[in-house]
Length: 592
Image 1 (tube, rainbow, N blue to C red):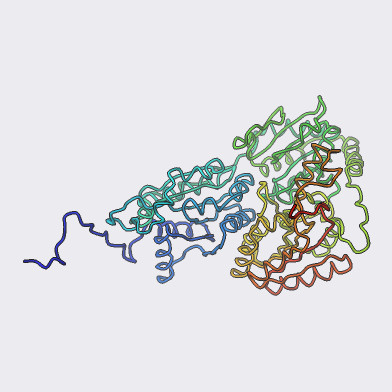
Image 2 (cartoon, rainbow, N blue to C red):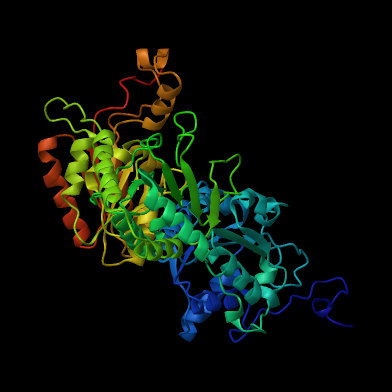
C-alpha cells in the first residue's frame, strides 16, 4: 500500500513552476524595453501585486543588465508629480508603478495635474490575481487579494488618461508598451494607464515580433504656407496685436521664434498663469501676467498654447478684433464646456508655426511708422497694466512683494523656479521677470501639492540646476513633505523650498470676494481658512530627511536666512525656509 503522504488526489493543485532567471517574464520585458526606449526613471510604490517586478529587478541587477533607475516613493503623490517634473524638462514619458486600486487612488490630484499639463507619463498598476487554485505563478495567496479586487479599477483615473489598457497576456507586453509610449508622447501629450494581474506579469514573454521603431509619436505639423502668409500679413497691418500664451515654452525654439516675431513686427506678448518661461519677462514687448488686461484694447489677438485667454464674465474682445488660435490641443476635448471665439484655429506645433510666421514676416514690406506706433502702444500698455504697489507692512513684517524681491536676489544662470502659490502668481512673476527658457515651471492643473514633488523630477532631469520651489503653505502640506524630502535626499535631488506661510488658504478667500465683494465674510473676516499660527512646516522635512529647517518672520533677517538655506542646497542637502508673511485672515479657529 502506498504511503498516504505520496498519494496525489486528482483534485489537488499542481503548482506551475516559477520562471527561471533566464526566462523573460512580462514584467522583466517591460523593464528592459522601457530602459532601451528612453525611460530613465521608474518611480515606484510597491505592493502585493508586484512580485514579478521585484524578482525581475533583482535578476536584472544580478545579471548586470540595464534597467530604469528605481526611485522609491513613500507616497504616490511624489511618484507621479516627480515624473511630471522630469517630463516638463525633456518632454518624454517616464514610468510610475503603483499598487492596485489603493495605490491608484493615492495618486490623487497628481493625475489631474498631469492630464491638464499635457505631460507624458506611463502609469502601470497591478490588478489582484484572478486565479485561486495555485496552478499559475502569481495566483491568490493572501487575503488582501480578495478585498483589493476592484472590478473597474481603471475608472478611478480613466477620464484623465489618454489611454487605459489591461495587459491580458505576457506575450503582448512589448506591443502594449510601445503603443502606450506612442500615445503618451504624441501631441497633445498626456498620461496613460496600464494594468495587469499578477499572473500575467509572471508569464513568459519572448520579445517583439516587429520593429520597435514602427511605433513613433505622431509627427507634429505646422500650418499651411498660405495660412502663415495670410496671418502674418494681418498681424503686420494691425494697430494693437497681442499674443496670449501659457505653455508654448515647453519648446525652447518656440520661445526664440516668438521673440523674433515680436521684435520684427512689434507685437505685445502677455503670459497668463504660465507653466513655462514662454517669453522673457524683461523683454520690452512683455506686457505682464495679468489676465483680462488689454483684451478690450487689442485689434488682433493670437492665442498660442493657452487654455483660458480671458474670463468671459469679466471682459470681451472688441467686435472688430481679429481672433486666431494655434494650439497643440485646440478644442480641449478632455475638458467639459469650453469655448473661446476664433475665426481660424490650427491644431499644430507652436514652434513650427512661429518659425513659419517669422519667416513670412521677414519677406514683408513693413510699414515702419506702424511698427513704431505698435511699440509705443506696448509701452503705454505696460504702464497701464503694471501692478499697484503693495502697502508697506508694519515694521519688520514680510509681504509678498518683499519676499519676491528677496527671491530675485537668489536667481542666477543656474536657477530653476518651481512655483505653486496661486494667489501670489502675478506679484512674484512681475518681480522675478524670468528670462531664460527652462528657468521656470508651474503646474497646468489645479491639484495642490505638486511643487515640492515636481522639483525632484526637474532636479533629476537637470542635475546642475539650483532648484528653488516657491510654494504656499497649503501646497506644501498637500505635497506630503515627509515623502517628498525623503526622496529628494535619498536620490540626490536637493531643492530650496520657500514656504509662503500666511497661515491659511488664500484662494477660497479670493473666490469669495469675487462673488461677494461686500459680503458678511469680508466684513467680519470669517472665511474658515486659517491654520495654526504655531505650525513649523520646515521641521517636517528635517525630521523626514535631515533637511535644513529655517523659519523667518522679520524682513531684516530674510535675505541672510535664504542665503544660508541656499548654501545647504549647494552642499547637496535640501532646505526649507518657512517664511511667515502677513496672515490671510485674523479669524481664530478652535473649539466653539
